[in-house]
Length: 173
Image (cartoon, rainbow, N blue to C red; front, side, top):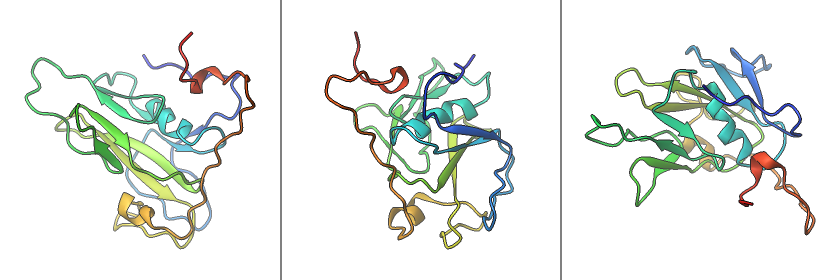
């Protein structure tokens, strides 16, 4: 069972069921559980919220608070999972992937589980009308990497000695 988003936490990314209705955007035709949109908070917050787009019964991999993907090695696994679009494999742990995506407020994320290997596949869509999309109407890491339309996500200012909201803290009491 997946954790529910915290209703009291401010600036959580929004998860929209189905396809987003955004004017002038080409929406991929593949079915999905939902899209994660940036609505505020730290740059990595929307990447970690992709955990909520995975099926409830999916336990092979998970998104960590920093947006990384970690797979659990099962006894019958003989090789690590395949690469994930926009992620790089950890140099010391081949079952862990770190995001390469540069932050952008115009990008939306969706996940699917590959049928054959049960690995996570990440799809992106850009709401900018001049975005570079592939043949399926989706954005790619290579297309986003040098995009002149990118709108970076601002890093929130936290005054000294201020408490960081619980979902985004890296401090352990």
